[in-house]
Image (cartoon, rainbow, N blue to C red; front, top):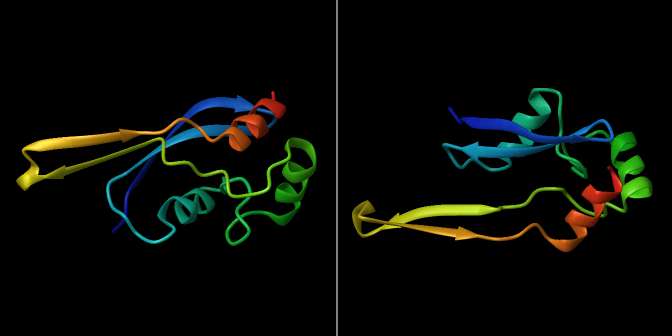
Length: 101
């Protein structure tokens, strides 16, 4: 089975900005699990709510899936040295988030 851990970081305009840690890496895992608990990823045309996505396009200018890999961790050499890559939130997603405040 696949496992995802959700943690709410902020709530804005009736939406939640979450951190998700996954233990497995299944296709669309975060999107499927978010939809399953009744909180689809914003801008998700496959698993989300079309009316909510339309409102987010109009209100916040969200033109794509609001999903961002802030951190990626992996190990090489048999797990001796962990590698961690971090990336800031993309400007278009940060702008959409600000517009929800």
